[in-house]
Image (cartoon, rainbow, N blue to C red; front, top):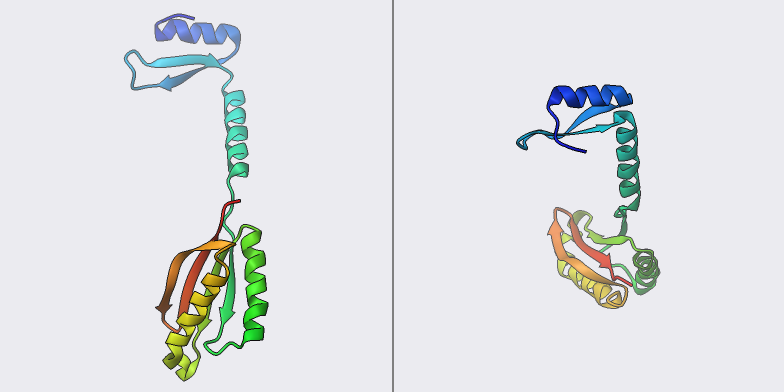
Amino acid sequence: MGVYPISKARQIAEEQGLDLVEISPNAAPPVCKVMDYKKFLYEQKKRDKALKAKTTKVVIKEIRFGPNTDDHDYDFKKKHAVKFLSDGAKLKAYVFFKGRSIVYKDQGEILLLKLAQDLEDYGKVEQMPKLEGKRMIMLMAPKKK
């Protein structure tokens, strides 16, 4: 390994049957390396694929309530919410107001806050309940184990 003029470096690469690859063009003098370029690309693609496989995909599960959801339905949906958060998925709980039921928006907020309180062992609230159109939405993220 040494510092060679570009013509000598090309000659060395040709003799070895390899490619001359420019590593950092902005350096003075530019840095080049003798290597098998196709093999380099293959290994880089393999590294990128391994990194992509390690990243976790965020799954968002939704649970829908009405403003006057009774206790049995609430418990049933809460059980599902516990399962979703335990599996590591984010939870989007929302109260959907149909027609004139929008006048019960305080009941919807109470319902979502009650859900957040019941699920505090399994997840934490990322976004407090807020009204968006005819829906009041709350987001929860699972707690780290």
